[in-house]
Amino acid sequence: HFGSSFFFLLRPSPVAAMEIARRCKSSRQYASSRMLLALAVVVTVSTLSRLPSSFVGIAGSADAASEPSTAAPSEAALALKIGGGMAVLLLALLGLKQRQASKGVKAVPWSGADVQLLGICLTVGWAIRFLLPIPAGVTSQAWSMLAIFVAMICGVVINPLSPPGVTLVALAVAVGTGTVTFAEGLRAFTDEVVWLVLLAFFFAEGFQKTGLGDRIGLTVIRMVGSTTLGLAYGLNLAELAVAAAMPSSAARAAAVFYPITISVCRASGSDPAQGTRKKVGAFLVECCYQATATSSCIFLTGAAQNYFVLKLAAGVGVDVPSPFKTWFVAGVGPGLASFILAPLLAYYLLAPEDKKTPDAPRDARARLEQMGPASDEEKVFGSVILGMVAMWATASSTGIPPVVTAVCGLALLIVTGVITWDDCAKNHKAWGTFVSFASLVGLAAMLNNLGIVKWLASTITAKITGAGLSTVPAFFVILLSYWVVHYLFASQVAHVSALYQPFLLMLVQTGTPGVPAALALAFASNLFMTMTPYASAQSAVMMGGQYITVGEWYKAGFAYFIFYVVVWISVGALWWRTIGLI
Image (cartoon, rainbow, N blue to C red):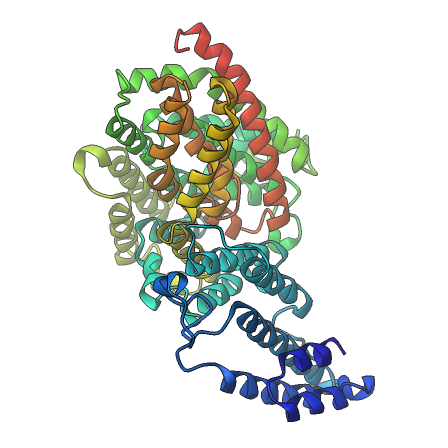
């Protein structure tokens, strides 16, 4: 009956409206899948036939926002037409679902979208686009992009489809409505970081296929495996040591330590495929994830964007003296506090079912004896990985991008037969993550290109200036705003490129000294990598392992956001005062 009322208001044609009202009177007829399908076709054709020939999508063009045209539909009419199309889609999906369910013994499970959850996502996007007023200085195209992006994130959270399906649908909507061009929508599929994520999955497969991952995992368990918490600290210590020489946090986390962590999880009997992800896996993966954020803050060499932020700071007149020493001295105090406390928070948020494993070291020793000496495949794979680590560690001096090293490494493994192309082609998690992450990165980049991010930054600046905040309150507001806005980004580098300099200038102009301001934003640029499943390259890889659900990820991401803010501001302030930085 809602559909009848809605389409009557839409008035696509008198005949269609009368037919809708008549056929929706009977609930039995309403449930008929054939009726719904026929109805969807009638209304869709009628609605589309009423669109003006000049209509190019819900966004229109940039000029259309400033120069009204009599040929373009009014906002109210456009809202009704888009809303009508959404309702038609939902009715059609319900009809198809009911048609499949009515086949009796031949019925097949519905593999399409969850209609109710899809309706929620579509409604969120529609409401943002048509119910919220478009701010001054923001084009309708940019506002449409924001609506699509928020609806997509809603879909990633509540899962009407799998994440790759959600992001692909969002990409199709953005391209199909003219909000972005096809080239703009697919631009991120050639991004180096996106490809590094894909290649990391293949290396993780190599760790498992050759048995090297199991060997390393069992060795770690033998040494520190009497408790699950001990395992976490042992893995994190290894990650911290490597971070001093490996400046690609994505490669370090996704291609090296995540596969090792997965091997430890499986050696401990924790595997999502067996329904045992919570045994130790969810906890250890979360600890591995948080360790990368912490180590990237302690060492200037811990992440590639660390060098970038110092260059950006120098570009606006803030030079950090003795950068390696200054960075380490400033980050080591709050960094070590985070390193010690972060696993304890994960122990509470994602409590492992097996907390003590006194027999694990003995069992690991026995299994290592059964495995015998390392095979040729293990030796070749280990040598290639060590060579890649060395190349990543010297990337700043050799000038070879990490993704080039990864491609060459994978090619060498394929040539030697350690990994085959069939192994890569059958890795559906890798390709699914590739599609979803590339779509997220591409659409997030368009938010920046269309001015949404700059609008948010300017709005925040105006509010701070208008409120007349002093230095300390302004520091908190600006830092937290810079941190929280990462919910709109799917790349740390993209976030830093777009907002680091404007926010650094905000801090300096409101009274924060230059070097502390530059370092505070730099550390935040590493810590916000843990907020969402799309916040960084390694996020996408670890999310693809299915040890942590989307809901758990967002819950933990928000908890760690609060945790890092408290630790780095409280411990950081005391530490920086002690070393004379403030």
